[in-house]
Picture (cartoon, rainbow, N blue to C red):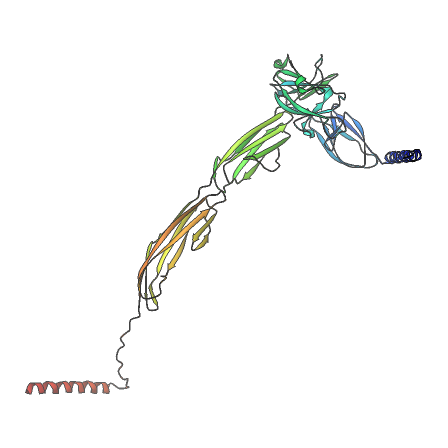
Length: 441
């Protein structure tokens, strides 16, 4: 590439830079004044730290979620639509959280960062995990600036203003009644623990207290509790799970290690476990992690019974006529089941019942009937339980041929009784003549 080409490229690049800068300068800006109280409050935009104290925001027109946070106060969050030019001011007068914090506890002191307005988070990076900015916790000289937390392990994140991701993160372990100096410019192995002389003399503290060149942030411990209204259920029976948490930003509940759906910080659910289950509540906040467990014992066992009443029946048939029917009934129960089938009848509904039966022999020819019918009930449930029972019916009797009937003699029908009397007279006369002849002999 010769010198002329290089010069032409240089001119083109300069022109592009000029055009880009001009376009940026001409882009519309939305301005809004945000006034905060207390003055140490931090402004968040769309969940990310923007700046400390009251500010005039210069943003592109559009929709935003603007939140004002300070650990010792109830946050104020508003959704706004900003237009180009000036917008109505936002005034945030935060209400203090009246509850106080007590020990045991330790201190965190942060050193080694150039921007003292960088936001500090414990155990998460959303605004609910925000505890303050570095200038409120970076020395112990005279009037201290101190971050006080329950003893334990924390994941700390530090985010510079107007940035979306942490520029530093690491685990810190706070010891009871000691001051941990976290120098983020050094390795964790070089951090130091120092005595915190007056720790045991402090009974309780406000969540946030600040004056000229001093600040105290006291983070409350997280607590969690979980309850089940039953200790044991049959398969398919409901159980009510209740939980509460304090000072948490998020809670999750697992069932035998599997995560349930996103849950509020406190509430209840009606569940239908299909096996013995251990539920664990894990509540996380800037003050630590608290857990609570509860177990429900699920009985999967299915119990069935099946009987025939009566268990022996008689059948009799003469010709085409059934003289005695083989009537009986199956009586059944199926405990802790949701599917019940009786073979060869088919599916039945419910946990108990009776099915009337009229039995006929399988044989069709004449002879003695002597047969056994077997019935089987099979019941299952969604918890993997199953059971079977059987019942037998003894069918006895006989199939006989049709018997011929004797028909009476039909006499001739006349309109007068005289022919009948004449016949009777003739019969009597014949009998007399026969007897007279016998005597002569």
